[in-house]
Every structure is written in structure tokens, then in C-alpha cells.
Image (cartoon, rainbow, N blue to C red; front, side, top):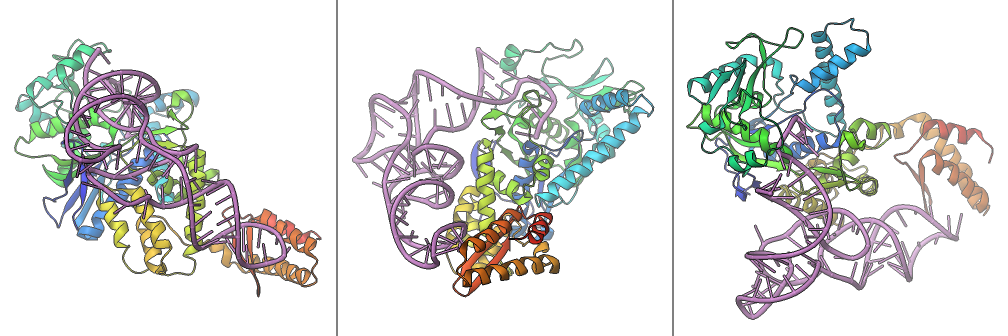
Length: 466
RNA sequence: GGCGAGUUGGCGGAGUGGUUACGCAGCGGACUGCAAAUCCGUGUACACCGGUUCAAAUCCGGUACUCGCCUCCA
């Protein structure tokens, strides 16, 4: 089976032909760690996690490298730290506040991703750990005439690179003509971008040939991919908003530093997200964090399934209605695979859908078809291949929970036998409110815990008279 | 101003020339003391106008509307 993906660089769907089948390399731009991950951050994490799983299936677990960076040098982080320090009375050093924020946000990110069953990448480098590599690449760009020093900054010269703009399909002259921002006076060309900038004493900075400073944003990905992958690798992913300028600049830096390389052969970009039909933006106050959802009791798998319900390249409208529908679907799938042990491979129809430019709606549709068949093992294995956990709640096995429910059910069975249906219904309603679903059969009743099961409500219900 | 994406049935959402996508909701039925869950059945579609073709949701041209990027952003 061959894997086909849409390559943003060429604008066509292409068969993936790894440079080295025993070392398939995927690079994805990770988070800037200054705040809780929102669902817009979650989308690429989930989408490329699924790609990672697919690649591992195709080429073998040990033959896929996935690097996803942590951006822990950024002016947004510095600003956040300064604001926190201001609020807390300026006791702590700014650099220490920064380290605290980036460490804590990184932990949050890991927790949130784990809740959605996102696998850890094989490598997760932090920008602060790759400064020497960045400095070395900038030096090389200066030597080759693609970068220049000006006013304490080092800038990349877009005019030195004829293909600048080709990745994102932009024309430099046109962009300058339509630019709405003022040009920094030390730039030779308005589109030149910063590789290195000076840091004042209170800001994070590292010694360099150009004085104490910090790297521009784009260079870290170039340096990291070089460090772990070499000059060329297979797939580079990220949100479509990163295509320009971030990925354009990354590609320009890397290709100028290594003119004989290909850098990323294939570029994959996920579409952006709307919330209830509107752009998600902090300024609009409608951004939804993964933590918000989890705290509300939304299952991480439901979030994941909702993100996968739309093809990754399409814009996704995040709505409560969609979330509820996907929650119900996942519950149905869990019910369907209760007691099933999945050991085999995922069903070929699901894998084929994913091999077709990661067509998750098609894969979900295939799962509906498999669900109707007898092979529950293949069904469960296929759902779990999408990274959706189907395991039942461990609480359902707790003896105290079982005992209370079965005592109540016994009373209900007796009421039904006496044909006192009002009483039987009252007991059923009490259980329902506590999150216990009842299923009557001719020879007794079954129960299971719903997602909203609440132990305290159950205890209270059992203590009341009915 | 420049660049790009989208417009599919009540809702969600696939589909790059010819067969019912699929799901949710709705409706009808089975099952049930009544439910829940489950199962069976079922209607509604391709923004608009032209063109190409034996055949177009799918290709080409145009129109309208929506949205995004060009500034930090996944």
C-alpha cells in the first residue's frame, strides 16, 4: 500500500517515497509555551499524531522519527513574564519567571496532549537547548552572502534567494506593495526577516559573534531539523497559518545554508479552526482550551474524535453540537466493544482511508461499516488505531459501586415482579440521575456507567427511600 | 490592494467524469409493562450563470456570498 498526501509546496497529491525507509522523518512545529493549549493548538498535534501512527504502521515503529519542538524563546513569553513579575511585586528575577512559565506550560501541554491520547514524539527539543546550532547556521548564512548584520541584528536577505516566496506561492514585490506595516530602517528589503536580535540585560540572551542576543523565531526549526534529521527529510507539518512567513523563512534559511539539499520534501498543513462559525481569537474571547473542556467533563477521546471528524485540510468549525454528536458516537463505539480484546491490525478499509491524504471522515465512515460486521476485534483495533481509547471506566469494577447498584436493581426487579411499575420507574430514574443506565431483558436487567456517572449522587440515591 | 480557501440534503461531512458516501436529527416499524439501548426501513443535495463531454457535485470560464492570510498566531 502506498501513502498519498497533499503537498502544499507543489499543490498536488503525491505518493510518499521516503528518503530512507528505515528512517522516515517527520518534523512538526510545536507550541510556544506561554499559555494553555487551545483547541487550535490541539488540531495539528492530533492530526500529525495520527500521521505518526500511520507512518509507524507502514514503516515500523522503530523506523519513524518524529520531532516536535518546544518554542521557549519568544517575546510573548517575555511579555507574559514581565506582566506576572509586575503583578507579583517584582521579587523574582525575570529570567527565573520565564523559566517557571515555560516549564509549567510545557507540563500543561504534555498533560493536555496525553488526555487526547497524543503519543510523545521521538524527540521534543527546546529552543533554549539549541542555541549553538542556531548561531552556527546564522554564521554560515552570513558567509554565503544570504544574511547581513545591521544595527545589532542579523537579517536574512530575501533578495539573495531567488526562490523566496515559492513555498507559499507569494511574490515578494507584490507583498511589499501591499504591506501594511512599517519597515524597520535597518532592513535592506522590507521582507528581510530577523535571524538574531540583541537582548537588553533584563531579557534572555546568549553570547554570539553579534553580541548578547536571542534568535529570531524561524531559525530554531531550521537548526533543529538539521540537528536531528540532517539537511533533507521527508515531511514537515504545521498549521496553514504557518506556511507564510514561518515555513517560507525556514525553507529559505535551510536551503540557502545547504544549497544541495531538499530540506522538507513534503509540506503538510492543517486547516484552521472556527468556534461556532467565528474565528477563534483571544481578542474575541472565544478561544477554547483543552483544559476547559476536560474540566467540564468532556472526554479527551471526544475532543480527539471531534478534531478528526473533519478532513485535516478543511477549516473545522468547533461547535457544541458537533462535540455532543462525537461524544455520543464514541459512547456507542465503547458500548459496542465492551469485553472485546483487540489484538489484530486495524481494518484495511480504515488504513486505506488514512493512506488517502489522511481522510479521517472516510475512515470514520469505514468504521460505521465495520461496526455492522461481526468482527468486533477488528472494529476495536481500528478505532484504537485512530488513537481513540475504548477501555471502560475502571470505576465500574469497584465493589462498593457494584454493590449499591445491584442492591437497588434487586429492589427494582422485585417491584417489577409485583407489577408495581411506578416504584420500578422511580428506582430507574434515581439510577439514571446518578449516571447509571439500565437495560431490561426478559431475564433480568443489565447496567452500565454513563460518562456522567457520579458516585456521590449514587450513594445519596441509595440512602433515600423509594 | 495582494494571495489563498470555501459554498453538498434540517445539521455535520466525504466524494478530482458514469454506481445509495457516511453519521446525527426526523419519520415508520420491531423489541419493551413503559422506557433506554439495539435492530430494520425511509425522504430530502450538490450557491448561481454559461461552456466542454455520450455523461459533471466532480473539468473550464464567469458571477455572488462567506472566510482566512499578508502583523503574533496551530
